[in-house]
Image 1 (cartoon, rainbow, N blue to C red):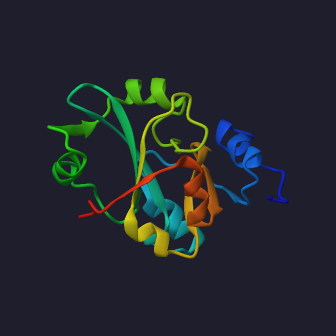
Image 2 (image 1 turned 90 degrees about the vertical axis):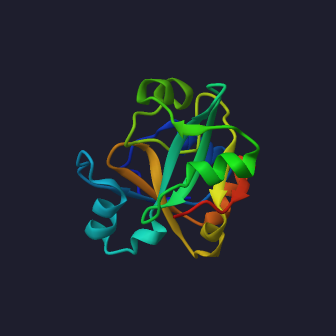
Length: 160
C-alpha cells in the first residue's frame, strides 16, 4: 500500500485499498487539456505508460469504458465491430460523470459509481507499470497493470 498519506482519498483509492492493491500516488497541478502528455513530461515517464480512461456509449446509449495508452487513440469503428455493436461514440461529459462519479480529466475505472464494462488495450498488459488517474484532476496513481484485473476487463486491440 502507498506510504505517502498526502493524497486525496477518492472512491478509487478506497477500491484499491479494499482489493489490497499497491499503488503509488502522484499529485500535480492539473492543466485543462494537458492530458497524459502533461503528466508524462512532469514526471519524466513514457506517455505510452500513462493510460487514460475513456467513457464511451453505444447506439443504445449504454456506457462502457476503455483503458488506452496515453499516446494512442481508440478506433471506435473497430471497437464497435469487435464488440458486435453498430456504433460507439464518446459519452457526453455530463453522462460520463453520472455513470462514473468522476469529472472528465479525473476519470478512473476504479471505484466507479455505476459498474460499466471495462475494456483494456491488450498491449497494456505488457507494461511493467502504468500511471492512471486516481479519481481526481491532478491525481495519478502508479500501479501494476495487473491491478486492472480487479475490474474483470476484456482485452481489445483498437489502438490507432
